[in-house]
Image 1 (tube, helix red, strand yellow):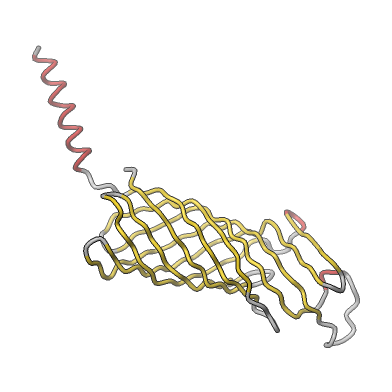
Image 2 (cartoon, rainbow, N blue to C red):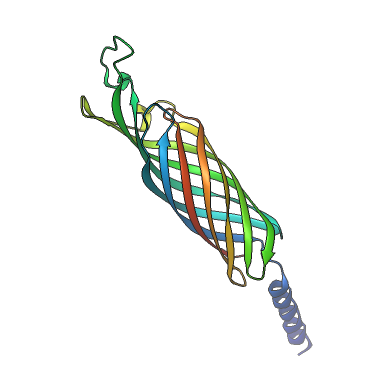
Length: 208
């Protein structure tokens, strides 16, 4: 009888301590819409999209960290030399209009700052360093047609992307949050460097 009471007391204490413990591990997902352009002559602005999985470590009240895995689709066109079509370039006037369609996987590391909060709402400031890997690139021109590159056919598949954003956080439940923020993102090292304005909607929920 005494042993049963001891087990009951220990179980109650463990349950109480778990219920009172601070949750600092969050999981979730995000959806993205982007408006992108190439850093090149006579570029165009085109819409794209993305999404991914979020892993958040939130130990301190006013800032937290996120890692994860993202998929991003971007497109744009620009005036460039057609060296990827294996044609002879004879002069500076040989540039043509080429459309680029890029699909990439990214591993983001994002720092979120919450400098101001009011009730269930908070201001978010974000900074992101993302390692990205191009998995599919399509190039198209009216003069030479379409070229598709993927896997080992791609030159310089890895690239670095930086992002800065300002947005909004809404607490939906005790351990559930919605983050919405626009950001400016730009490629630092890339075969075809893009700039993007990205709107991210991210839902995270505490698990431990």
